[in-house]
Amino acid sequence: MDMFFDEDHEPLAASAAVVLATAASPGGRDTLARELVGGRPLLAELVARLQSLRMVVVVVRDEEDGSLVAGMDRVVVIIDPEWEEGAAPLRAGLDFLAQSNEFDEAFVVQVHTPLLEPAVLEALSVARREAGTLVAAPKYRYVRGGPLLIGSELWPRFLGAEGALDLDDYLKAHPQWVSEVRVDFAPPRRIVTSDDLVDMPH
Image 1 (cartoon, rainbow, N blue to C red):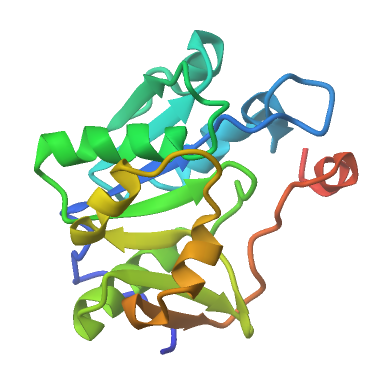
Image 2: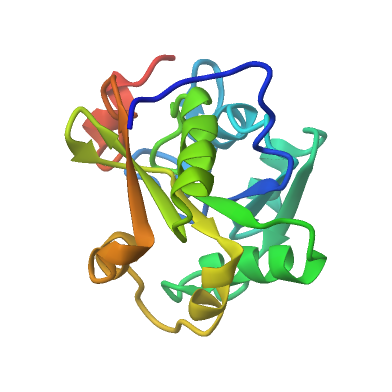
C-alpha cells in the first residue's frame, strides 16, 4: 500500500504511542535519550514528531531522562525500575494505556530512530483499520522498519511477556497479524554506534 496523508481524515483520535527510551548510548552520555539531535535532546526531538497522537507514553530509566520531555503536550512519563529486563518497558507502557481504556492502538517507537516521519503514523493507522489486522508495519523501499502499530486486542500477549523480547522477530512468527505499508522514502536513520551519532544533524 502506498503512503498517503489526508488532512481531512482524523484516524489518530484513538491512537497513542509507547516510546521505549531506556537504551544506553553508544556515545558519551549514559542514555541515548540524552544525546543531542538538531540542538536538543534526542528524546525531545522524537516525541515532538509524535504530537499528532492523543497521548505519548515515554518509558525511561530515571527522573533525569523523564525531565527531557517535561512540559510537552499529551506526554506521560513512566519511570521503570525494571528497565533492564528486556520486555519490561513495553509492558509498562502498554499496561498504562490498557488501564486508561481510551485507546485502540499504540505505536511502539524505539528511541534509536528519532527522525521518523510523522506522516508514516497516519499511513499505518489507516492501513491497519482498512485491512482489519492486529498490526501495521512500514516497509521503506522494501525494508521493514518502525514504528510498529499494534491494536489493543494484541496488548495482553505483551503484558505477560518476560525476559528478552524482540518484537520484530515475534511478529515475523505471526505474519497473519501484520499489514505491511509501503513507504516511498528511506527508513529513519537508526542509531546503533557512536558513528551513527556523529552522522545525525546537530
